[in-house]
Image (cartoon, rainbow, N blue to C red; front, side):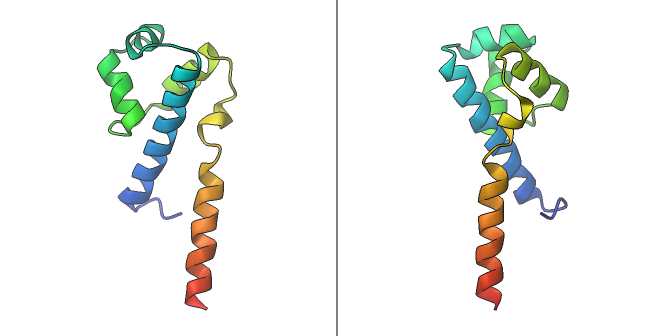
Length: 94
């Protein structure tokens, strides 16, 4: 992954946001309630979930602690998706 590519970084932010939204909904929490637990506004939760704002690692860790999930959950699935895209791109170049 090219970490200087802003589009690829945005993909990570959006992936983590989708995982945050999934967890919040799984636990039946509103954005307001979830924001209160984390000490941020519901608007900030919306921005995290949409990938508009990056969720700081410290806050990501806190939300995983609150919901009793491993922090790796936030990233799971991204590596596989990204790897499959790289393999496809590589094969096209052969």
